[in-house]
Structure formats: C-alpha cells, structure tokens
Length: 107
Image 1 (cartoon, rainbow, N blue to C red):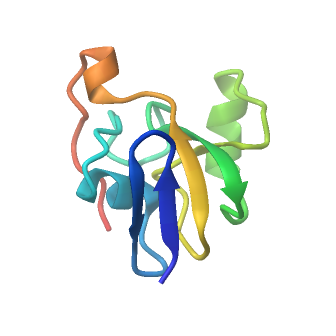
Image 2 (image 1 turned 45 degrees about the vertical axis):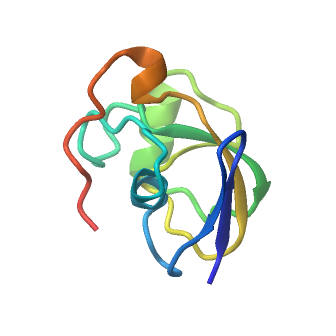
C-alpha cells in the first residue's frame, strides 16, 4: 500500500487507487473541496513535494491554468488517484481558511 506523507501532519497508508482528497480527509487533514471533487474550484490544491501523482487530466489542467496555477507540482487532490508513495503539502485547509470543507467528493 502506498504511503502518504503530509508535511507537518504525519503519514499514513492508503489503498492504491484511492482519491488523494479522500485519503487526506479520512486521515485527519481538513483539506478543502468546495466543489465536491469536480475539478471546478481548485480549493483542494496540494503541492507534490516528492513522488509521482500520475498524469493530469484535461479538466484539471484547464482549471489550474485558468486560475493561474501553472507549477507542475501543484495538483488538485480530488483528481489524483494514489498509486505510489507521496509527500504532499495541502495549500488550503478548512481550519486555516475559516471556510467549510465542502461536500465530500465521491469515491
């Protein structure tokens, strides 16, 4: 099983193929996902510090580009399926932003 390390928050193992946003939320990281995991809002952005997050979909690339996030290591956690070990840094969390996380994304 892949290991997810979250900068400043520890690490945990997840089943291969799980959505990163759900893995983070299920392990106590209060990641935002205001659009419910539909690659529309970019609030679930993470910085991939180590590891391979997989290929980026057209929808994810388009919204990141439209919002001005052009760094290759910035990804939407709702669009990443975990297939290998990752070290990530959440960019927006509910506790830091004061916002409600949003509707839980689908599996």
